[in-house]
Image 1: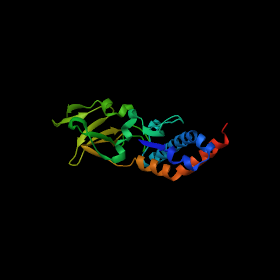
Image 2: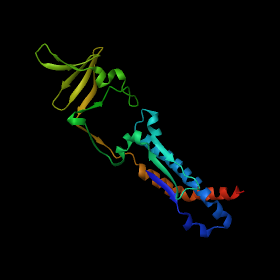
Image 3: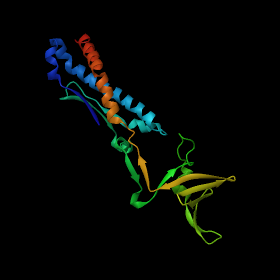
Image 4: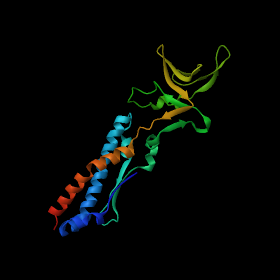
Amino acid sequence: MIHTYVDAKRTQHYLSDLAVQQLPFAMSKAVNDAAFRAREQVQAENRLSFTIRRPWVLQGWKVKTSTKRDHPIRSLLYLDPTRDFLAKFEEGGVKAGRSGKALTVPIEARQGKLGIVPKLLSVRNLNLRAHRTAGGKIQLKGNRGTFVVRTAANTLILQRKHGETKTLYVFKRTVPIPASLHFYQTARQWVEANWSRIMGRELVNAINTAR
């Protein structure tokens, strides 16, 4: 999470009495605006770094706003804990299957780069079961013409349909997780580059609209 906050005591002795009076209001407006604008930058960076197949993924970025009565005056940009699947891409690492099981990585199960895996082609719904071949070997076969093949390099789930064979999935023991989120870097750099402009604008507005 990123906090945007300001210290009024270090600023007010440079200002007029009216400006000091309006300072808390201006600061709350500024930190909130900075947080929302930083969120837009983070979401834009996400679109560049990831293939977003479900638009609601980027809705996980939340802003907790501040008021002029808060001490300190600060806003919070954070990732909703219920959608923290993005968080692992901040530092990166390795994803492994649970209980030592292999991961199934979609290859042609997806309908294009931006597509998602149809429910009918999910591994669970393929209902892969052991069958004995004519040669006496045991092979996993499933719904919709699917079957498992083991090669020297990989284990694959294939689908034979209309005389063609597709590679739906490949099994992997681990999958690398790239450090491609860039949340802290993107948000911090944007706020640092734009804070003076935002704070100055809100202070002027607060003074001009003072009652």
